[in-house]
Length: 157
Ligand code: FES
Image (cartoon, rainbow, N blue to C red; front, side):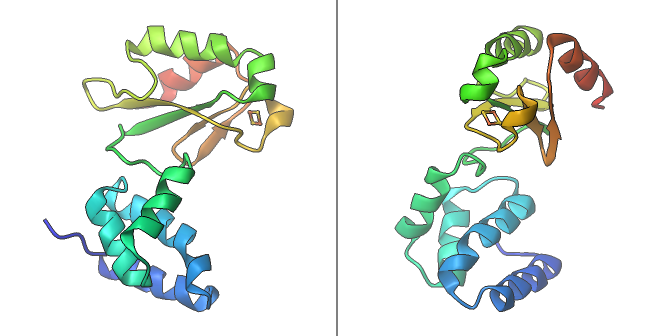
């Protein structure tokens, strides 16, 4: 099935183009928009974005694979992205990851069978002062403890 932005997303894309007259600078925000629109960046979405911006698919694919925030596979309703970088590691990210793995019954990179949670390990989320940190969809959860993780998960419908 061919991918195509909705009218609303198309308008947002046109705004992006106005904001970034250099097409190259529009790649990241266009990919963010595409991810929001299509859920993840499939090969078809790479083709679509490359056509929209006038770059080769290889150029767009290079960007998509460089940044961990772009999902190349479908993700669950809640995408748990746990930082595994230095500050978070020093302050217990390993325990948080182990806890999530056990509690959800999935390994990093997997999604629960009900499609509710995807667990990913990511690099520095830029919030080292409040490590350990996890991002769920667009929200940050900071100064994590195992207990806090349980409370957070309970609140997610
Ligand atoms: S190391 Fe985890 S937010 Fe920077």
